[in-house]
Image (cartoon, rainbow, N blue to C red; front, side, top):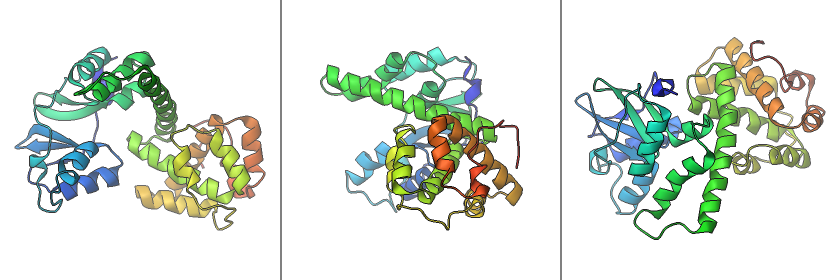
Length: 290
């Protein structure tokens, strides 16, 4: 499949003089793992969350005064949007990277990540997991069979999670995976708070494993202050939506959640909800609107 699927209307880009603190805030606020660095209209480098830990915190640098140009990775490998997924996988394996910017006529137009390829099942899990294995083994002994098994397990867990996020992105008409992930966590967090602890734990156990730690730290319920209106307001604030669009987004995320767990579990969940929320967590066509 062509990499044109990974073109992005909005990219998180900084200039080399931006501070490391700005990069960290951009990564946190946009829920991404890296920011790209542009210098005079050209891609100059990339800064990942790992770079910030090792090259800034590890060296005791001042995040306020250190420019990203001093800690970014340069010589970034790129691809044209006309390239295909197999070429991206080959480069990830060869260069031990998880992200490849897409450049068209010198202009940054997108980004393909290992998570994207996992979500799209672009290759067998074992092949994609080899990218992570190569990174683990870089500069040290080869990963052990036990480590390789853990990597494959983690890759499968990531694929399951990203598949759910991708479905929400498609069904809800959101611009990015990051937005879909934010919407999912807002709705699920509110739902978990609205349930009794036992029912919340039963629900969490059926969700993708990468979601479970986040949801288990939610305060135990049932919190009856959680209503359809409060969830819609949280979505509206997060995405700057009007009330009608926030209501539609809630319905579509709720339907995706209902399709993720068993029918019996979802019936138990609905039994603890007021009528206004019970209808949200029903399987229905994503084309339906509130």
